[in-house]
Image (cartoon, rainbow, N blue to C red):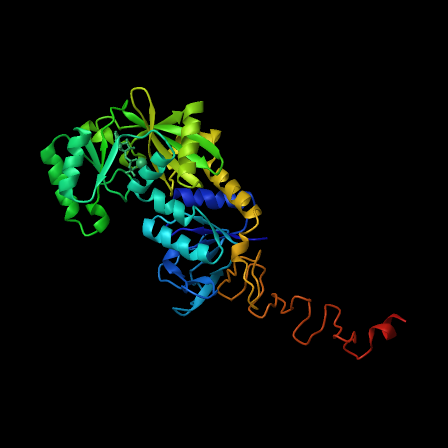
Length: 398
Ligand SMILES: Nc1ncnc2c1ncn2[C@@H]1O[C@H](COP(=O)(O)OP(=O)(O)O)[C@@H](O)[C@H]1O
Ligand SMILES: [Mg+2]
């Protein structure tokens, strides 16, 4: 069986749920810590993990990248081979993106794909993709210097929301109610070290009914939706209704319009396992953003047993795994092909998931034909069919 890879540098509630769902479905998987990934940029060598100091193991899966047996630093431990399906749960945008690029270059199918992460991880790119797909969104403008950003704010009309291109949990998003505040916020952004922070991304502040909507899309299906209400007593800061800011989460019924918008938004960014944020304007539903590394703790708590996000993700991974790998990645060099074999995933004794060591011998020391180190089969016969006393097969059976 082909083990799946789950890329995650932190194992949070969501990852634990996903591991549990895979175990319930008896799907073998390997947890790979992207902080330990190493890959060459050329050739067709594997992407592998090396030992690290902050070892953590995962029940049920062999902890790819950890070195319980004291593997020397720098020694490759497990390889991610072509044909693998990898779920990308890396929390860092940069690591998620580059891990996906490295793995995809080797024919590993990553959910979500690198191009999806690149679009979702950048709010301006997301807005461009949503607009190209003709989806309704808050009026949005961008500018490349603080000065031009202030003029964009004037054009939008105050109050405006100013958001960082990269970021989540509502962090660093600000409301500017006048020109002076917009100038201050944009000047502060321009003083931050990341050049991406210097791009001004502005939106009209939509007068929403104290809540937003989060829809979770997995592959071709909507798993469900929740309303997220600003916590009581949040005051003016309550305009950001992220679960990470303490929003109260309640189930939201799926209307045909909500389903269609969420699916279209997910498709507009390339599809996968996604969280679509929407807000209710006076007459319309507007798409705010699409998240590529969706958290679902509050969502799952709101729905209880009615939905199972982790299981939907596990099912989607199996669907992806059942599709034949892209033939462009089939290598024609004399090297052995690894299709279907996917993960080398050796433990600290150097044994793979079948329990075979690097010579291909099992725990009894037998090779793939079942022969021991002397070349004898399970009945003690050598390759000529002779037993330990030298009698051949015909003599014995005659
Ligand atoms: N233009 C807007 N008008 C009204 N509320 C907004 C607007 N943009 C964001 N918000 C609120 O702020 C929250 C965070 O914004 P969002 O664009 O989803 O970024 P993040 O990546 O930080 O979650 C949203 O869930 C919503 O409650
Ligand atoms: Mg959001």
